[in-house]
Length: 77
Picture 1 (spheres, rainbow, N blue to C red):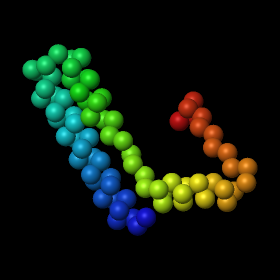
Picture 2 (picture 1 turned 90 degrees about the vertical axis):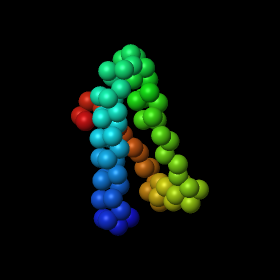
Picture 3 (picture 1 turned 45 degrees about the horizontal axis):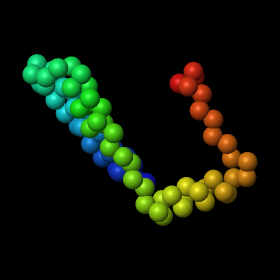
Picture 4 (picture 1 turned 60 degrees about the vertical axis):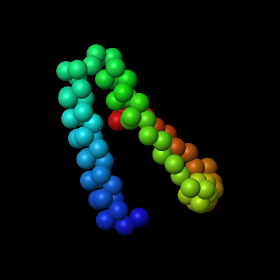
């Protein structure tokens, strides 16, 4: 992936997060808090879709390193 793609993705994500915050502030005056939270959470669950080639590439990368292990330590994050 080129750096320009990463920069563009970052700009788009900041735009959508800003729009989300503005919509929450604007709608909070007209709707109950529970509804606003539900709507924001629902819109935030946009699925990430990977093509079959991308999934195959990921699996091939894992197969290339025997004994590969991914550890996520939430306490250190």
